[in-house]
Image 1 (cartoon, rainbow, N blue to C red):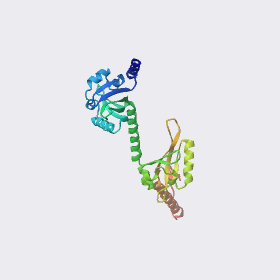
Image 2 (image 1 turned 135 degrees about the vertical axis):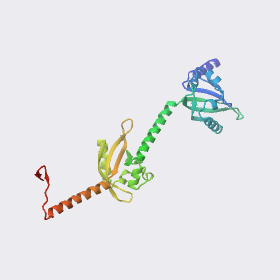
Image 3 (image 1 turned 180 degrees about the vertical axis):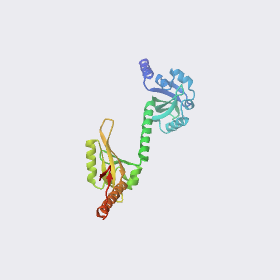
Image 4 (image 1 turned 90 degrees about the vertical axis):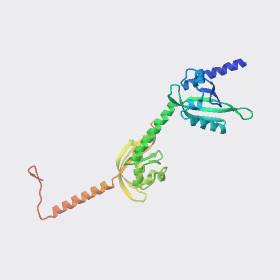
Length: 280
């Protein structure tokens, strides 16, 4: 029975997908399985044990992470999901997540450490790429001259960029989680826009907004639906521009044209325009 139990243990140990190891308090491996050897780029457990005589300084990209691990183990006998970067045999670097526990005698003296390890390099690359993508998007949103406001599917504000802060007079922190209707001169406009965008996926047009001080101002809005990976509606992103000056210029132009027309019509002097030999 003992022999059968040992054979079963060795079978699990040798064929496990995860790396399994025991290491001494002197930074050396006591035993490792084939999976751990592969994680670190070695051909066999024996090669790994013989080559790595100082885990802290030979394997860890940042030896201080090893110190942090030992410090954590001195306070907690079991540590889960401890992540660190390691050098492989060919000096390439990978990310490894470990679950480790301390094995001590009855007097509390640490005898050795044992645990499991998983190569999470691809996951970390994806996380880093996602983080960089989010940072890039946030940088664009932050530096945009247009007001960018996004809402969730409950019409609560989840993004409010710098341009929007300057235009509306609110800080981003003041509005996160607040209802979007707070920004419209007419609350019904917000409801109408929301329904129309969801139905049409995207809309553009003029809208009357309201600043924090109650002042109303016109904007040109482009709003579209945001979807998750499964195509489910998760919110709306709105990009708008303050067209107060444009409206003022248009009004002044109309007033100028009206004044000019009035002067011409009431003048005692006749005016005419000739184009291509024809009276206009």
